[in-house]
Structures are given as C-alpha cells and as structure tokens.
Length: 452
Ligand SMILES: NC(=O)C1=CN([C@@H]2O[C@H](COP(=O)(O)OP(=O)(O)OC[C@H]3O[C@@H](n4cnc5c(N)ncnc54)[C@H](O)[C@@H]3O)[C@@H](O)[C@H]2O)[C@H](O)CC1
Ligand SMILES: [K+]
Image 1: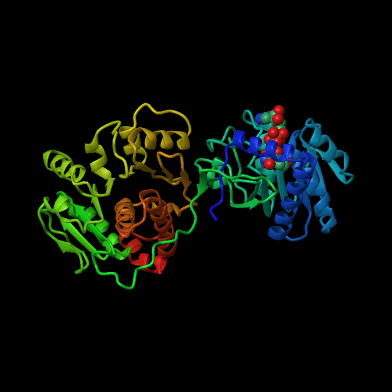
Image 2 (image 1 turned 90 degrees about the vertical axis):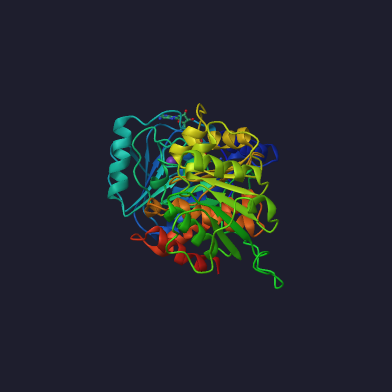
C-alpha cells in the first residue's frame, strides 16, 4: 500500500477528526512518542540519548519518547528550548521526571532526537538554535528527527534555516510533502511512518513498487505492446528510448525517422511512414521527443503524433515544440524536466506539488515533473511522489530511457497515470542496480532485473 502524503493543514484536519472521533490529543501524542522511542531504540540500540524539546506538540512527543526510552534502559537527558506551551506538551512534560538541562547546557550525546519543531514551524530557527542543532546532530552517532527535521517547511520542503542531515525521520499518520521534496530531501535519512490511529487517506502518495500487467499466455508481439518512436536528426536519444521500451517488455518497437540508429537491439524495427501512426490500430503508444530536434521537421512529426489518436508520450524537444500552456492533451503523458516545465507552464506559482497539479489540470495530461524529487500529477488530483532516486541518475540520456520505459508500460495496457508512476519507480530502481558510475545505456541493461 503506497504511503499517504498530507500537507500540514490536512494532517491537522485528520488529527482533529480523530480527536472528534474520541481519541484525545494526549493519546495521539503518547502513540507518537512511543513509536518514536521504538524507532530510535531499533536504530541506535540502548545508549545515552539527548532529546531536544520545543514548546509545542513536537516537543510533547519528545517528553513521551524520553519516558519510553528510560524504560528501555537509555540514559536520557531532555533539553528544553522553551517552556512547554501547548496543553498536550505541558501535560507530557509534567510526566517527565528524568534529567532536564537547558538547551544551552546540552552537551553532545551518541543519540540525538530532534523534537524542537514539526508541522507547526512558522519561520526559520534563530541562528544560535540552528547552529546548536547542527553541532549536536553532527556529533551524534545516530541523529533522529521527530516528524520533520526542525527548520523544514512541511509542505514545500524549503529549509527555513540551515538543517543538518539526519539518519532517520519518524513521522506520524502520513508522510508530509517535505519528506519527498528538495531541498529538504537529503536531510531526512530513512523516513519511518508510524501509524497512530489517524485516518490519513489522501490522493497524494509516495510511489511504491508497481504491479506491471503480466504477459498474457496468448500474447503476441503486438498485444504485448507496440511502441512507435518518432525520431529526428539526433538518433542517439531515440535509440536509447527505443531500446528502453524494448527492454521494458514491449512486444514490438518501431523507430520512424531518417537517422542512423546505432546500438539498437536487432528486434527493434527501423523505418515506416508517418501514416502508419493513424492507420495501424495495433500501435499502443507513440513516443516523440528524444532526439526529435527543433524546426520544421520536428513540427511535422509532432503534428502527426497529435493527430494520430494514439496514447502519446511527449518528452524533450517535443515539449519545446508543443509551446506554452498546452490544452486538450487528455491521456497524453508529458515528461518535462525543470527547465522544460518552466517553459511549458510559465507563470504558475506555489509549491512544486501545487504547480505540477495545476499543469496537469490546465493541460489535461499526466505531467511527470522530473528532478531529484520527481512528481507525477493527474488532472483528477492524484499526485505521486517518487521515492528517493540515486543522484547519479542526473546524466545524459536517462530522460530518454524514462520516456521509453513509460511508453512501453503504456503500450502494455497500463493507464497513463499508472504507467508514468510505474516508469518513474522502475527508472529509479534500475539506477540503484546500475550503480554510481552508470551511463544511460547501463540503465537499460538493468531493466529486465527490475521488471522480472
Ligand atoms: N499530526 C498528528 O497526528 C500528531 C502530531 N503530533 C506532533 O505535533 C507536531 C505539531 O505540533 P504543533 O504544536 O502544531 O507545532 P510544533 O510543535 O511543530 O511547533 C511548536 C510551536 O512553536 C512555535 N514556533 C514555530 N516556529 C518557530 C520558530 N522558528 N522558533 C520558535 N518558535 C516557533 C509555534 O508557536 C508552534 O506552535 C507535529 O509535528 C507532531 O510531531 C502529535 O504529537 C501527535 C499527533
Ligand atoms: K523535529
């Protein structure tokens, strides 16, 4: 089951609904603090632990976790940044009878737990506070953040003050957008989601391992998925995309273009007239973009693709040819990187989730907003957040490979949104297998292992 993602406001609404359903804040906090303590103990084992507590309920979680960790044999010190302010934090602090030090006095500890601020953060931490937090986190063997690393904006992933890197972040009920958005993403460490009895259903979610349709026994090469790749003058990109489609289970891949397509698997067919796109009902998806270039030739290819009535995947220069603010693109999949997104959808503002959803609504297409924090948006409001992908994916040709993977999954019968989410997940997993020195071609050779 994919992990749900909620903004701070929607998390608070879900929390409120639980409270109105009869679960007290104290109970929720007790569950949160207990889950936090469990995760800390499991990660770091028994040891000297310093818990930094803020004045609100994030701090309250810390006082509860402190009690639970003492029960597990930890030596725990609590450093209060400020006196408890929220009622639940006051109650939790009153039940803490262990060692308390001032924030300034707090000395480094092998285990550090940051319970200063969570979804209630309204502005950056004072410099002295963020510096102290960073020093304590850096000198700890295990640094764990409660709900969010303090200083991170929960809905947009901005770092409102410098944020140290944590080994783990323990969050409650649902992930927050910041857990999967830059620039906060590298600070999170492993994100653990604790169920504290809140109904946190959401149309926003973290993309999980996909269920790719099995190949039917009676399948023949066309029904297994027939991908047509429209290529322009730069044949290398189209070759990568077509090879990726072939390695992603498409039964038949055809490249239509004039280039010399080196390095293609022998199974990929090269040649054919543009009229094929509309005439051949067996074509399951049409990919245009990788290597299509700009100018009259590209415009003609794009128009043929737009007119053919087949499921489309548009990437790279096809997106530039499409022009700003496209509409009526229903059922198409657009895969812009940040620069292409800004050109395609100028003038949008808000968080990356909000802008990607708005782009999907305006265009009618599934929009894959690529980056270290790739998002997949549907006009119906669904928003998939990619799990962390290796930084080495940022290399030439990897976008062509992603477009090829998505085109194959689309041709194999997945609907546009599911094919885009699955492609993003498979792409990231293939990169993990390929390792840090990979080039785009290596990604392709890892695809069978990921899809097996
Ligand atoms: N969502 C849930 O189901 C549960 C969440 N829990 C925890 O509650 C916090 C959110 O608690 P909240 O009291 O709303 O806010 P914070 O504790 O994050 O912030 C405290 C308080 O601090 C003030 N403040 C904000 N920014 C700053 C700043 N830069 N400097 C100083 N003071 C600041 C502001 O007044 C805030 O209200 C959530 O993260 C979870 O950890 C529940 O415990 C369990 C259920
Ligand atoms: K925190």
